[in-house]
Length: 149
Image 1 (cartoon, one colour):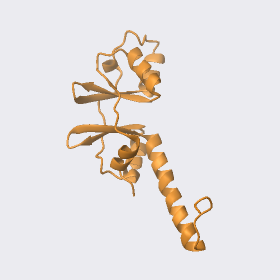
Image 2: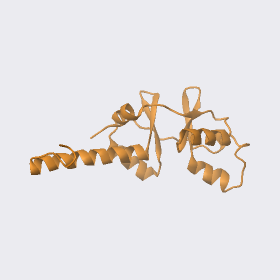
Image 3: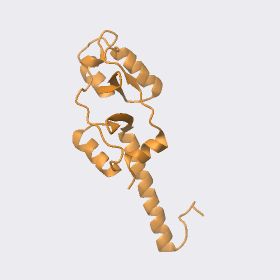
Image 4: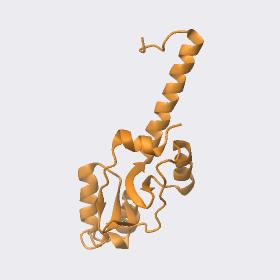
């Protein structure tokens, strides 16, 4: 089974972040520009939170606050669950489902090395399932799966 480290090797470990004092509006603009659903909140090199589209919807939009006036630190989730890069995809998927979260920072020996989303995990599971199906097809039929000749 694939690990988070392998996902990061494929997709890259680029991290998009803002400071706690960044306005929610500027954080949303970054998220829109990068087509991402969350940004990490860093104070220097230290992870202090994560802000997601869900945080914006529930803590700004529904409360009729102005995103250009509110700093990220007022709406971010400060209790951030992190995972190790050697974590399996299945274990990561279970954490995301149980905790109802869509983004997990990846920490390696205290250093922030990436971020994985539920989309990354679903794609990895689908890739793994496809590999198993192809292998079973080859085993049963004695020939490669269609399109694999």
